[in-house]
Image (cartoon, rainbow, N blue to C red):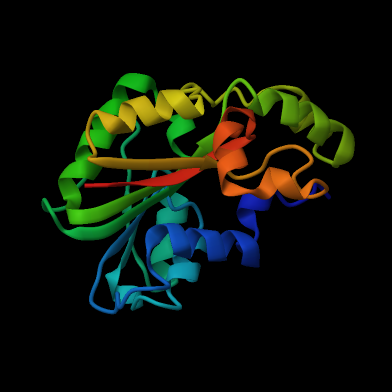
Length: 221
């Protein structure tokens, strides 16, 4: 039997904590707020949000119709995402948070730029767009290490062919800054940070963020 991929497993405690902090959910009263997971997959991040936000206020979009059905069966409100059109079927200024993890790298650049405008449109003033995506080209160095260290050797050895929108941390920051008034991005991990304490210092991480394997952060409307 082939191993289960990480994105089909429940979100780790560490990733869940970071996600909630970036979304501003843990420190705010969002019981009446609406959250959208853009590219929600099987709804694993929606399950994280459900500890703080009522399920009827949690929405998802997903290109896989099978997963849309799965997510709806969990009590969330999922809508299909068209692979050709950038229109989101929501009213303007209707969400407090739009979240997206490992999705934008799969969207052709022209379509991705249109989606950024749509996400800005559906966010309420002061709302957050929280995003995570691989940090190219540094990501490929981490892939080589993962190919040696994990059982997903073939997957990591060759780059994912569906990654048609390869962004660096500075490239994403530039795209977001054109639309949003405040942008904060950081690397999720820098090589050896678990062994060298000063690499975990915020100022050091900011200076070395180009060397991170993945980008994560938020922007404010």
